[in-house]
Length: 228
Image (cartoon, rainbow, N blue to C red; front, side, top):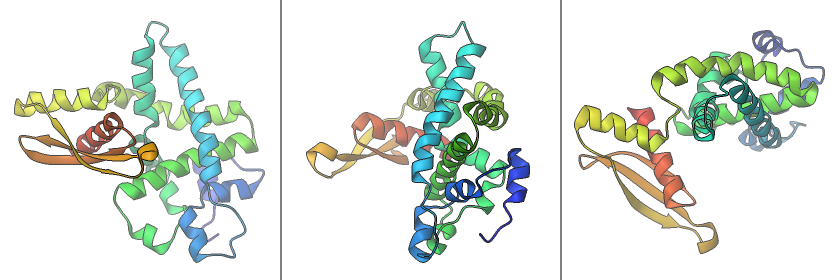
């Protein structure tokens, strides 16, 4: 491991009993291609676990904190707290980007792909903490680093559906409504991928992809909001 992980443990306020779990959470799939002697697996299984732990922890906190809010409002708040843009921002805040092991090619990427890698590493880290300790301790981590973003989410209206929020912003600023167009359809019928562009005033703002037109439109709206 090229970097001293003790510093990271100090920042996150948790010292791993099983250090390999921490190392695994920081190992991107691409790193294994260039370092076949690396003995640990990539972090995708931990990411899968951490995603579930994070969602439960955030759901539980929101449920207890806002007894008056309806399911739809709580769902919007949760989505704003656990999406890849928010998780990538938190990852940078705690300096996680300095510790992730990835290929030289991935390390040069500064676009959306890098943000997704950071977000996935955050989820993998939560999964690793959960396995190394207890749900209570992993919940403490999410309270400290994820739930503290709630004020920003509420102030910025980030909890609203991405398409609705984009429409609000464009109507307010430009007096026009976004238009979504399917740019391409690829793959077999059972696993088709749609690429959708969102246009404002005839200008392409962003693109998104998904396994349904609706999913692709939401992703395009999210990217448009990010670009704006």
